[in-house]
Length: 446
Image (cartoon, rainbow, N blue to C red):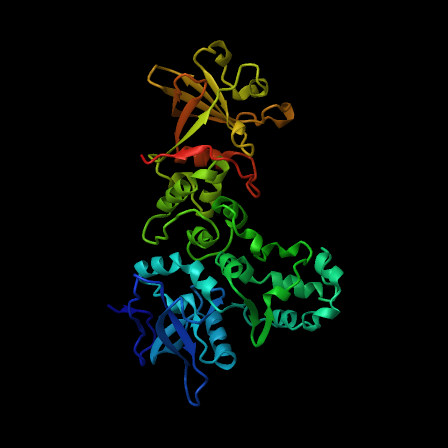
């Protein structure tokens, strides 16, 4: 079966993909041919191979889909590419002629969901096995000046060792060049994180200028936080998402898929399912590090609102109730309903901060019958703090299921994910830097 790659003006026939062998680590590679006299378009050859072959990966920004497309030729057929990729291909025919290249927009049939799933699932291996990764920064004059700055061309023996270990920026590189370099939209991409961390060697490129990524100063003031490094290996998916959930990508779920090769969570890449299904799958895979703020981080990565989540998806939390003399009760203020203290044998107060210190929400459960269902008021105030910390009047009503664990002063609290997302988004806590917690939530199948 063949897949149509692009439509364009009449003349050349459109390039059509031949299917990959999903039974092995198969890929396609592309060779950019030297410019031929009289050739109207950039010419390329594409062939099938596997990860045992030698090839170079390209890391770059796709650019907006609204930008006009340009024509290239692949195996003599027409293919449409966006301007940033075309600018690289034109450089490649001079600088990397006939070098086997793996470029996702060209080497993956983007219209074939099954193939996208297969290729993205092994994306980490594709970059890890590549001989080299070229990070294409575009063709801005500032980036070319940065990459060719004399600071990087000095012999290693002449570089002041104090500069390499000090957090003071390289003073010889103008601040404007450093700011422009780190402000390049390339550094905001989600996919570059694993592309650069897993690569054997990374070459930064802008037009005809090149620089080994390892030569870039590691201490550009506080500006270097956008540059991925080896310290990211071994972190949990939740930790990585808490850092990179705002990265740019064409498809929201790629914020998750782009990190899979750096962590151990077992998540199946699937572009056919809904974002809600990806959300549920991710929560179940992160069961060892799942807490309330972690749920919020995953929802933010997928840009899900509470109304996007099915109310039939549930989590279960195990908590001990707060005692009547606890700071929770002393500082609940007007968030606690009138008369609550009068029925301690039936009413329960749970403080979420006992399991997730970044979360200040409290749940007050008022039993209405013996079936285990409670009316619940959910309010946000800080335990153990004075009146200045009160969030007055912030409470709402819902119904949750609370059951006592036999023989223990512990309760299972079951609530739907829709409510949990609403709680997390409603809380005033800023989730920029979550604290990893032990598992406190259990995602239920029904």
